[in-house]
Length: 189
Ligand code: SF4
Image (cartoon, rainbow, N blue to C red; front, side):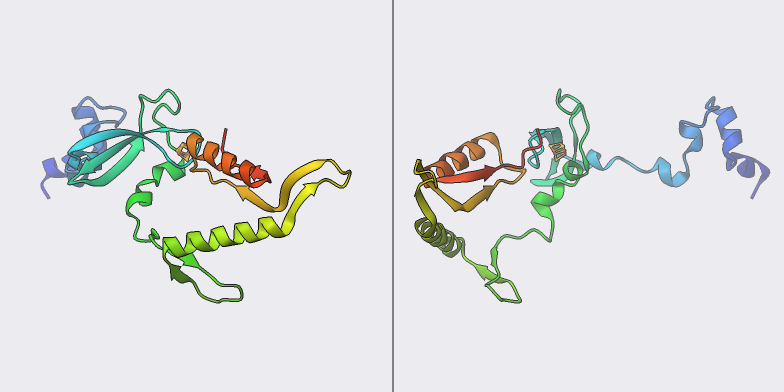
C-alpha cells in the first residue's frame, strides 16, 4: 500500500483533512458504510397510522413498497409519542407479516396434549353454547340478603390491550346484558 493510501486509511488524518475533527461525518465512513442507504429509501409511499397494540396510541409511519410493509417507525408529528415507539410498537410489522402469525382458531380439548384447528364458525358456536349453559347453571336472581341480583358470577371478561374504545363499549354492553359483572380491560391509560 502506498504511503498516501495508508494515510488515507487512517481516520485521524481524514478527520483533520476533511474539517471533521470530532469524527461525526464523512471522515469516519468506510467504503462499506458509504454505500449504505436507509431501508426506508426503497418505500414507494409512507402511510401515517396508529400503533394498534395498546391504548397509548403512538403515531406510526408505515413504509410500503409493492403493497407490502417494508418498515414501521415512530411518527415525529404525533403529539402523543413524538416519534417514539416502545419495543412492541417497533416490532408491529410482524403483526402483519410474521411467518409465526396464526390465521386459524386453535383449540386444545380438556386433557388434550396437542392443538386442533377449528373453523371460526365452530369455535363461535362452542363459545356461545358454553356461555349460555354456564349462565343458566349459575344464574342468581337474588343476593344472599334477598336483594335483586340478576347476575352470574361464573363468567368473567378480560379484555386485551389491542381493543379500542368502540370494541370495549360493545363488549361491556354485551356483558352487562348477559348479567356478567366481572368485566376488566387491559387498557394502559
Ligand atoms: S404498544 Fe408501545 S408503541 Fe404501541 S401504542 Fe402502546 S406504547 Fe405506543
